[in-house]
Length: 144
Ligand code: HEC
Image 1 (cartoon, rainbow, N blue to C red):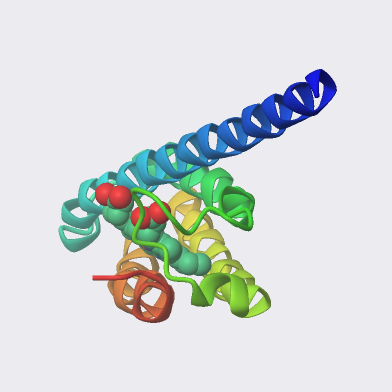
Image 2 (image 1 turned 135 degrees about the vertical axis):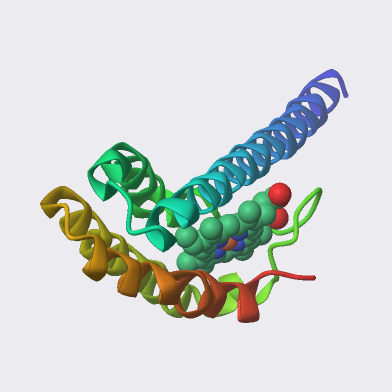
């Protein structure tokens, strides 16, 4: 009897621990994604004005690091709670990763143009990034 209680207690603690860990990963990815949105907003006026795109390299480095690790912030079971992640993510995880990898490729193009100070190439690439690369994933995998 006593052992059974003890085992049940451990199982409950395990469940609570999982819920906590998933709450953390949801908060962590949402915070990071907000920061990515802020980078895109800050980049916009510089791109449009054909300004000094070299100053954008640190933002692009932060974006590259974040999006390279993005799939790890969507572990199985983290689709419930305070999140807009759609269950389709875990049904099509390879596709989700492909869309993320495409964005990473686009960010590499942006970083190369920024480091070279090529404002025209930068602006052309930036112009399609939000709709084609961020939006491609949001359309299927983020709830409204
Ligand atoms: C591979 C898929 C994917 C890509 C690519 C992607 N996102 Fe998202 N994004 C999501 C998902 C899924 C959510 C919902 C996350 C949640 O609520 O847990 C989200 C949510 C967000 C949010 C809302 C965060 C919040 O909770 O307030 C912002 C802002 C955001 N993304 C910005 C961007 C930007 C900017 C880009 C491109 C530079 C981008 N995302 C690219 C999948 C993606």
